[in-house]
Every structure is written in C-alpha cells, then in structure tokens.
Length: 369
Image (cartoon, rainbow, N blue to C red; front, side):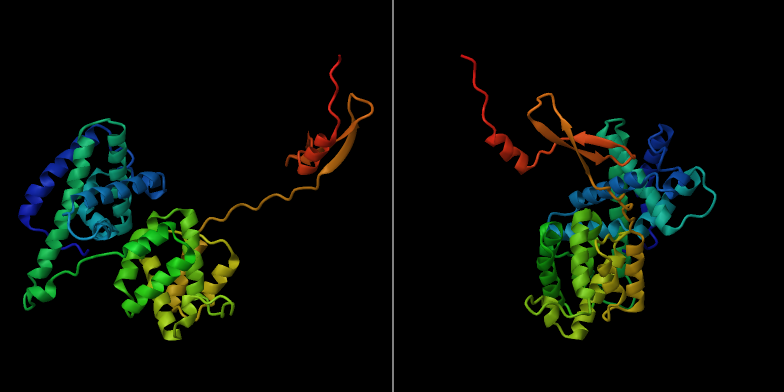
C-alpha cells in the first residue's frame, strides 16, 4: 500500500469525527502512554503496540466484504497496517503537536508505533469497559485506513495514458495451506509446501512473500524455531544424508538460490525484530550459504544477532551422599545432600525406582493379636 494524496472531501468528512474522538480520548486520559514519545521509543509500550496492531487487523478483517477466501482479508489487513499507511494517518491527524516529551522528528517506523500504541490503549479500554468512545475511536481509525487504501487504488486507476485493465490491482491472497502449516505443521511439510509454491511461481514469488510476511510476526517462539529449521535446510550448502531425501536436494542450484532469496526477502519484509535459533550451526549455515546475496545474508544475520540469548547456567557440583542412622538402630537409610546454588546443601531422600522396589521387598509389620 503506497499512500497517495487524498481529496479535500475526504479530509473534511472522514477525518473530522476521528479528530474529535482523539481530542475526547486525550482529555479523559485514555491516551496517556501512546502520546508519551519517550515511553514509545524506549519500548515501554511494546505490549500495547502488539495489542493495537492485532486489534486493527481484526477490525479490518471484519469490515472487508465477504467474498473470496479468508486469506485475502488477512493479507489485505496486513498491508493496510504496515508502517507507511500508519505513519501517513499520523501526519493527517496532526498527532505531532499532541505528543509529550517530543524533542526530535519521528521516523516512519516510530510514527507507526505511536498509532499502534494508541490502538492498544483503546483496545484495553474496551476490554475494561472504561469509556464508550474507545470502541468508536478504534472503529473510526479502521475506516480511515480502509478509505486511504481505496483512495490509493482510485488514484492508480486514474493515471493518465494507461487503461483501467492494466491498472486494475492484483487481488492480494496468501496461501492458506502454508499459513496453517506454519502454525501447526512439521518443518518437512513446510519445506515441501514452499518448494511446491516456488515451482508454481518462478522467481521471487509474491504468494510466498505475502504469506510469510503476514504469518511470521504472529508465530510464537516454538513455531519460529521450527521455521528456522526450514530456513537452515534451504540455505545450507552442504549435502544432506543420502538416506533422507529432502525436496531441496532435488532442485537445481539456480532454483534453490531463487527459493532461498524469496524466503529470506519475505523474512526481511516482515515485522520481525529478532530471529531465534537453537544451535550455532544454524548461524553458520546462513553465513556460509552459497545461495544468498550479501544483502540477504547480512539482513538475516542481523536478525539472528538481535535475538536475546539465555544466561549461562551455573555448574552444579556433584551430590554428596551421607549415611546417617535413623531412630531404628537396625535400619540405616541414605540421604542425599544436593547443592542449592548458594554454597549450602539441602538434604533429601532418594525416590528412584530402586528405592521403591526395596520398599516393596520389606516384610509388612504384623498386627498385634
């Protein structure tokens, strides 16, 4: 979606009610965090921005006409809530003069983050039933984003010297099967689907790019690790095991390089800020991949380098076994002292399978007659 100049009628009618609702919400303290620039820039509103982005996409998917597959609505909602349209809405609403702790000009990504944080505060106000205008303001923001999208399409159709058939926008559509496999499939199934889609669309396929860009930011950590396993197999230049044949091993080197470029460029086009990984070999396969250009390799390595690493675990000292006499003189039981990490030891009794079998072999006490 590329924002285009909007008509005066649109400026007067569509944005008038939205500006009034923004003033009401600001006067009642509903936009306290979103209009605080320092809180937005230092990451304090990250959870609000994530909630707001999801709320805007859900509102857009509900307002789209009920025709075509559901993936069409999902893809269009993703395009409308990218950084450029949100930054354009930020400028049209004149939010720059409403911000607090505002010391410099904001970038496009920072303006979009302010809009997402604003939507997150409104969604939180709806869930907590604080004020009725929260839902109205969120709906008006959704309507304005859709109107901006339709206005950009009309401006493209009215380009002089070109026919309307040539300017007709290509319908956006993600691959529903690939999206479902990214959420719940195995890494081999995801790999086979990517190879199949790439064979249908030679070069940098739009369907692969759009599906990955729309689905990856919504995956949790476990599913992202599964996708990184797929990415490692695509980028790796080393031959795999001869006993296990993968779909990428049957591709020509040029086709595999084209597939790797399509997948990596989709990752870079998404809103991911980090790319988690499990093993250092995955980073090495990306760094030494013969199928990636320098731009693609460096961009993917930057995402992996931004992933926070887990702190190193403290080495655990071996357990010490101390035999102590119990109150019964003829029976001795072993207790195990384990280090608790602070220099002292805690005492416990073994509860393994061997201890349970020994307890079963003990004679049961006879009841007194």
